[in-house]
Image 1 (cartoon, rainbow, N blue to C red):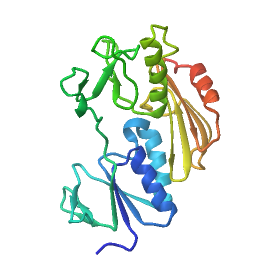
Image 2 (image 1 turned 90 degrees about the horizontal axis):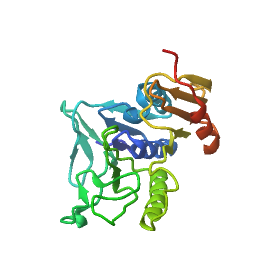
Image 3 (image 1 turned 60 degrees about the vertical axis):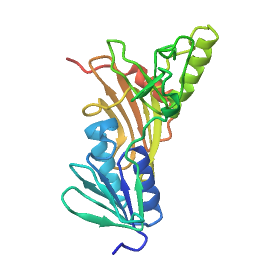
Image 4 (image 1 turned 90 degrees about the vertical axis):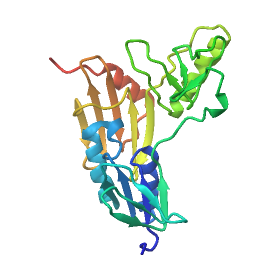
Length: 250
């Protein structure tokens, strides 16, 4: 029998963690089910572990499963895990990824399984057609893989580039804006720079355990990232910090 007012969230990504945090803030027992630690594919193991510990202290329970969870009941009232465990709750929310809505573009040559591919000018594979927004992905060019990053900051950047390209004007900047933010267990996290965050941070100011820290990652390939963890830090300041971070010594 389901616990009174309990919830299950499938998927420990951005949306899943935000939904779980909203439940926990209202005193609703909530369990998050995923194959990975929360946001591990984006934040990397180090920051994901810190977020997992904070969320657990906030009242969010985690279950890691090696395979797919299956919805149970009609109407849905729980999930079945690959090992046979069944969980029940009053509310079940699936936040296990999303698929670009491109079915209406069938036959146009504009879209494939990843969405609508664009280049640095937001040009599609069809001459004279430009695209922007969550439905797009940046096509690989031999030095980078295909990359789909459906963040609002990218949608804004691509809108500007697509408009300029359609008018025959120089692009005002790159079509990817490596900035996003989320709120996890009552704590705001802002990130500037390409993800995932690999390894441990290059520098830490403040305390992650206390929920107030400024973190930077710098890699030998020249990429740098800055993270405001529970701090009110302007995006411009984070951009400047990421731009001035130095790679580690060999």
